[in-house]
Image 1: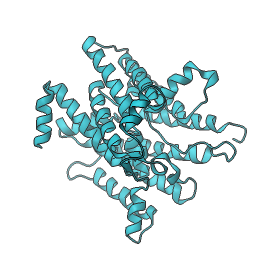
Image 2: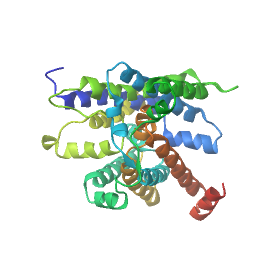
Image 3: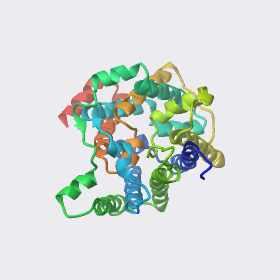
Image 4: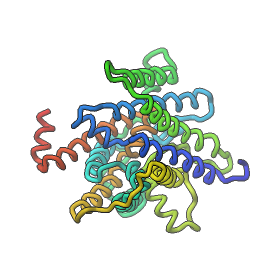
Length: 357
């Protein structure tokens, strides 16, 4: 691979893993909002537990790579950088609320697009442009003005490393113990054990996130042309993909661009194979408005929170970054408020119920 540019290697690796994630979304019904809806309104935690098992598998794989010296996860952005605590909370709430309006997250948007959902094309474009503008465009001034990174920051050290300083265990041992505990709680329930299919889906997702660290941290490693260590997220890469297709000759391939395209391809192949591919559009102007508003909220919120349900929810969680549980709880609460609003139609009663609880 010495003759292939690191960016190309990263993009190819991202594409391959993205295809797997696309299959997991359509075949395995792996969906964040769907799992939240099942748990809150259907008393069914199976999909939520599948999500938790994927996190446990990703933690095990990521720390195993680090333990073996293949990659150094402390160089990942989630551990090497620092974020604003308030921005993470606000961003997570906005992203979760927007996710409820749209009906899925950024990852789910790509999976639906692969199935012929033209509503998701609108969400993809709006979310991608908003995320890019929040990172590098006009909205970046609003972001940095409201949430400066040098105030109220989240420490870059991960949970395993912090606990290692307090007890006589290595970060890797602590990570394995945490992963084992999460996996045990997710797989086993009295009279409700996890089906094999869900375990396979969790292995696909958790293994794919682990492969992201391997691709960018090992296969694409080049001392003369270094590539940043990263794994799957579907926030900023949506904007990068749009820019790349608009200015291909003036842009470079990235891991996230390959991942974005891969999810759409994987979802499309799965839908065609299962004969579930069909064109779908907005029923009326109100539905289109929800797609537009939700896409803006997800694009802006994901950048504030430094990730989406996959970026913070699994990739950051696989490094046991402090920001991951904060972002996940915020996204969950935002989605809960949004779903209650859509069902009950009254934001004030929804907020009143939330405060009462």
